[in-house]
Amino acid sequence: MIKDRLENAELYYGISNNLKLGFEWLKNNALTNIDSKKYIINDKIYANVQEYLTKNDALYEAHREYIDIQYVVKGAEKVGVCNKSFCKTVESYNPEKDIEFMEYTLNDEWQTLNEGEFLVLFPTDAHKPSINIGNSSQNVKKVVVKVAIN
Image 1 (cartoon, one colour):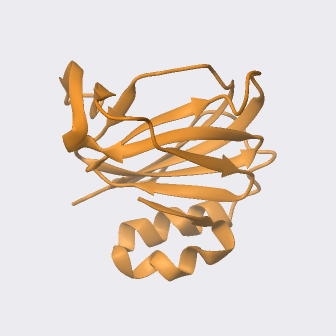
Image 2 (cartoon, rainbow, N blue to C red):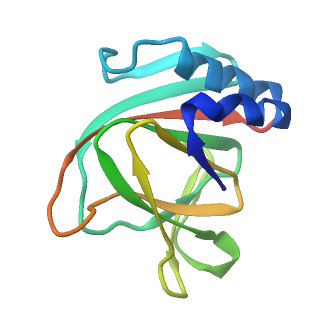
């Protein structure tokens, strides 16, 4: 997992060219005004723009074929992040959606994701996004860039 601000994304370009292209797409679009939908960047990268209310709880999820860049455009949320080897699968891996759902077997570990910040989540990183900060829900606009590993 990597947590940082979008203006520092160039520090991570060397990890992979696909990751670099995903960050460049985030930097080169007016994200506060962009519609909530799926955007195809190329055959290995796409972005899902989402607007939602945060929630009290969720299952952890993990992916095998894609790295997530989760970038908050507006609002803030908590994201649980852990090594998926410490999780118990509760919904088997779905290869069509590249997702499996699980529960963390230890105490939750939280990251707060504020406006302008991103998390890069690798296949070893189980994550529980979209969680309330405190007791009340808030509106969040987030872009999840899905970057193919290969």
